[in-house]
Length: 70
Image 1 (tube, rainbow, N blue to C red):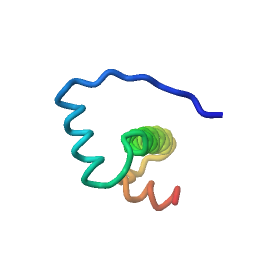
Image 2 (cartoon, rainbow, N blue to C red):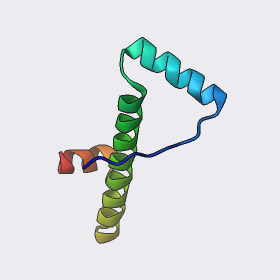
Image 3 (cartoon, one colour):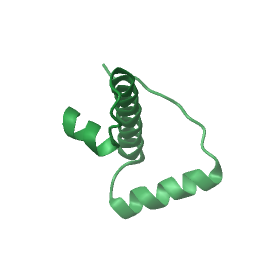
Image 4 (tube, rainbow, N blue to C red):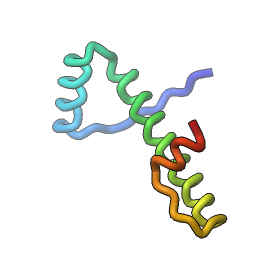
């Protein structure tokens, strides 16, 4: 089941969105879905990294954590 989310964009942000989607040949919906998916992945990645850092005394880099979860 798909849900609909309505957002308000400033004219400047809308112009950038329109330009980018036209240039990349994708729909605004696709761009926004990809942006949200990327944001959520990064948030989950950072949360996992934080949890691992609390469990160890070693300092892992983002690359180390990415290797572990990939």
